[in-house]
Image (tube, rainbow, N blue to C red; front, side):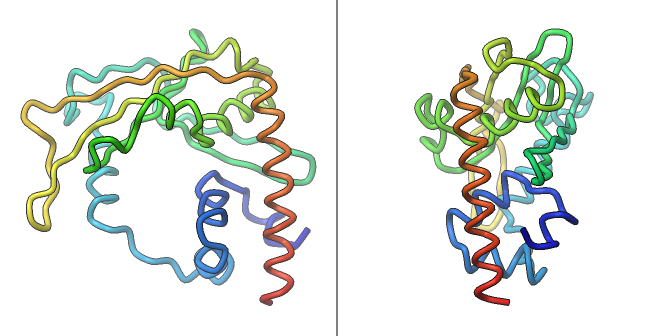
Length: 193
């Protein structure tokens, strides 16, 4: 394993970036040539930052737990990291929020298969010994409208909550996926260094 994986923990965004385009992943995460966030991402971050605060842009969206809950775990020599939007240790409730201008960007099927939620459950198990079957998981989809170059929430703002579950088998399979992907990343680095 290259030294890069020992220095910087592996995140879901790195995994999904490599899966989508290894060359772009190499440019962003290895060479450090990052493209600036696009306006849609910046607006989504703005909305997310306000959620769960008195100035929430979606005041009806209330979720329990610690905002930006940090997860860190080791999968053998692989250090993994994640920040779920909210997690409540008492109720074992995991919440993730997503914005998009695409109205069918999130469906129940997409939420049920979303790797980020599986990775968070894997980290909860590794770090806090919480079984995925015991975790209540909700993904809140917040539709966004684009007006020219600007983005805005509909008035009134709305959201759709998709409850989902994960199993021990799923997180074990995801752990194998991470290990396999890191090997591919390592090979890519060695072949492009």
